[in-house]
Length: 313
Image (cartoon, rainbow, N blue to C red):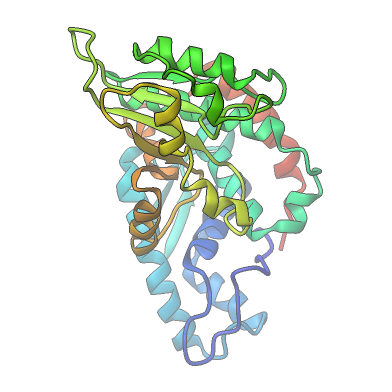
């Protein structure tokens, strides 16, 4: 098994102070990346050995909560879940290389719980961010077949000024740029928090259709910028740049999986469409090999050196 994360595993005597998503991600990673069965009894032993819990009964109470969350995750993906849950046992059904999308999202989430491991690969997250944006676009294109998805085309490796981005957005949705929009932005501005556009056009090509401006955030939740990003793109600003017939909605894509109560809280903060790990992985429910071969190869190449360095227990 992987080494138990130090983060999210606070000592629990009379109340549970372990973050459910941290323990779930650690269990799923141990199953998928180590290709081994993990049982509730093993986890209880580890929690007691590391003095996070003092009694078996209280530790088993936590396992009940965790297994409920794991079953919820499995229900969301149906046949696309790369492991099986039987009683207090989680068993792999796929090697991580054959489910690169799931493996990618899970590894991105592990950076939250294993910060030292994540920092060992440096502070340049350019490739990670670009890969996540590509992955999100493929996920939406596959699961929302009647919708059209457009990338702004901006990245650190292929930078474009906001002037080009605005023109690209305007042409894609068929809405004009506003008059004197230049006064609302700096000349050095880039994409203004916009990574993807998602729209459901009608046959007549006219406006007044569902339209989402989406931010793709692959970074860790504990980063102060993460909470801010939930409110980007800034719809007020974009309404001064593009003459929308109908105000668009915001979308926010993240590789994390949340307990249901937290999912609702993040939805409220985004005030739009929240695309968490399991919404992004929706195509896996009907096709395990849904990620395109070129993207799958890039994801595996990104993952391989990182998985090799995961701390083992």
